[in-house]
Length: 297
Image 1 (cartoon, rainbow, N blue to C red):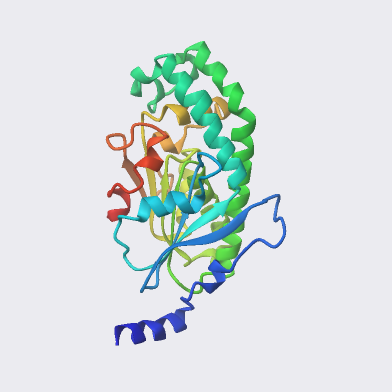
Image 2 (image 1 turned 180 degrees about the vertical axis):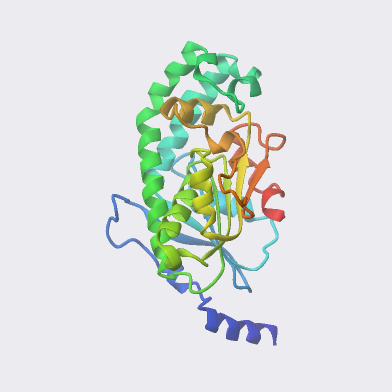
């Protein structure tokens, strides 16, 4: 009876997920070369969860693999979970550059020992050793291109969701690193659509987001979330502190600190969660994805 009942409800809400599973970008859209949905997990229920990775490690790694590993031992609350496959080539370049030039070399300079003192909310480039600052030149092109593609991917995702490729099912978005920037850009694009973009996303979780900690921007993104918009941050995220702040000197970064709302009446949707005791740095987000916490409230 339960299965039959769900079948009726699914038919009403358009909950088959066939549109997402079958979606492949037929042509390059807005300079994107790779964009598709890969089913990670499926069970009875209406919710759709779209998971967005922030980097990949090597040719054998994939966006699907990131989230298959992350969700394997986590109980499914029902519905379908999809990995957004986006710009895999650029994500592998990002992973390679960060691992080879930032993680290893920054550690060799002993910067990780000072942690919060260097990349806390009062982060300033003048506090960084000159050798560490020079490392940013090694990743400028890769970071800039991946950031550009993440903005395009977010806008394209918003367009598809507004066309109800997922049916009328409640959507949750989860992303880390550049994947979290995809999520934020998606929400901003949905908010720009007015009524057409509202009532689609229920919850969005952004972890280690390389995006400005602007109350105005996050308040706008919150308009496209009916339940929760989570900013998960780590005050000792050395990589995010160095790279994002080196390229965006006029902005504080959401992945390092809480975002304060600019709305006079407050923001009931926006929620800041300090993950510093769980996540020690940018690289930890992927490893700690199965950790219960931000998504279990």
